[in-house]
Amino acid sequence: MRNNKTRVCLFIRVSTEQQDYHRQVLELEQYCESRGYTITKTIATKISGVKKNEQRPDVQELFQAAQAKQFDKVVVSEISRIGRNAREIRSTIDFLHSKGISIIFRNLGALESLDERGNESFVTNIIIAIYSELAQEEKRILSERIRSGLVSARAKGKRIGRPKDTKEGAEALFKKYPKLVNDLRNGLSTRKAKKLHDVSRGTAMKVKKLLQN
Image 1 (spheres, one colour):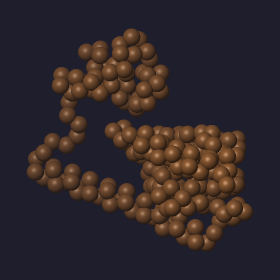
Image 2: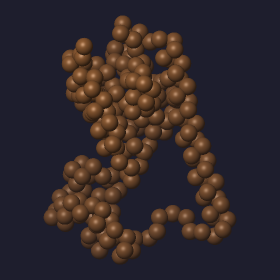
Image 3: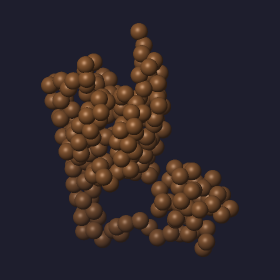
Image 4: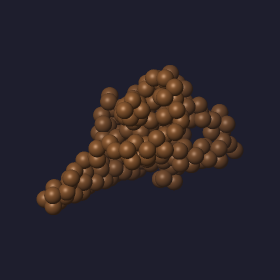
């Protein structure tokens, strides 16, 4: 029998501005619908998972909502969406557990971090610990590959870094964010445009700068 009274928070994260989190949102919404859960909050953001919790607005929003008892469970697609630092992941989980809130890991067969009595199980803790370390190790390996690639590129005399703004680059940016361009051209502030169009402050500022050239 479905429990329609279970309130959940969808917690979604991607690492870069170029990535899209809407697929995660859709998949988790479909999962919650199949379970009969009521989604009372969705936190979706674009931010690096290696940052500490106090540097992450999404985690702080999660903590505040948990403190206010806005949901009973948190649903994530995988543990790396919580973060890429094993210690910070454990800290987030511990805080939620202290409020009686369990986490559902969709990619682990909908594994829950707390049982029906609100207790942590030994097996679940072991699984969470392993996947937390894996999430951290994946990030370390990726960082090493990037550094190695940069060193190799410099040795070959290749230019490192973003290319300078060109007419072609500006046109591509305008084509990618037409609504953002239109609103900024009509006087909307970069702060409001950032929120309205779900882009970074840097992107909004860059578009505004190009419009002024």
